Image 1 (tube, rainbow, N blue to C red):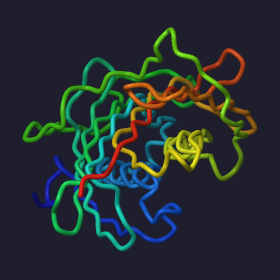
Image 2: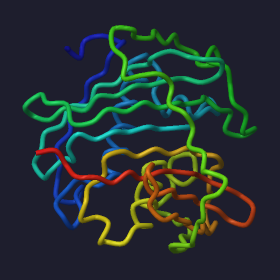
Image 3: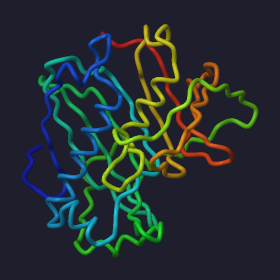
Image 4: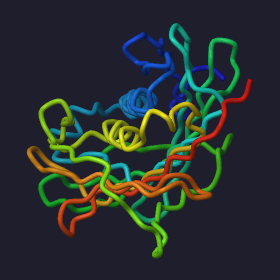
Length: 250
């Protein structure tokens, strides 16, 4: 598959030491970041840059993500991220991803739901509000639209730690960056749980956190679905996620 159409965008990334954790395995936030970068480039190819979208008072907001790993990247890996717009359902957009290593072996797949929003009014916009045409790709599919994360009603959550949004956590919209939420979820588990490896990460973003807000990061004991994690402040819920830990395929 070549990077020569508006339908499928392919972006190359190298894994550096700063992208990995204490086990020399790629951080979840690194994977989320390169996925975001690939999507930004894909939208830019349509003829409107992210800067122009922001200047028009619009922005992209991720709603739900479902990311599955076959292998976690290692330092010096050369990664190829392939992404395409799967289609729309109402005001929601689905974007799929496949991530390959330097041997062209698939190491991860992802399904995401996005919404285009009016930044000032905090209102979700219809797809036709985007001033360029987006052609959807039907030649490949990772799966149906991901289901939002919903915590079981009978689950018990305990506070793992507290996090205050500062400069390093903000994105270009002035909100807590999506990729940083990956770090917040990973930090909710003790290192003993990281003797295993991440097999699947699901997250639903419910409300955006802004500068100086303090989040209580809550975590459940391990369930058959994994560890449930929630970011809250008072009665405000910012995100709900699941980390499913397992053992890496050799």
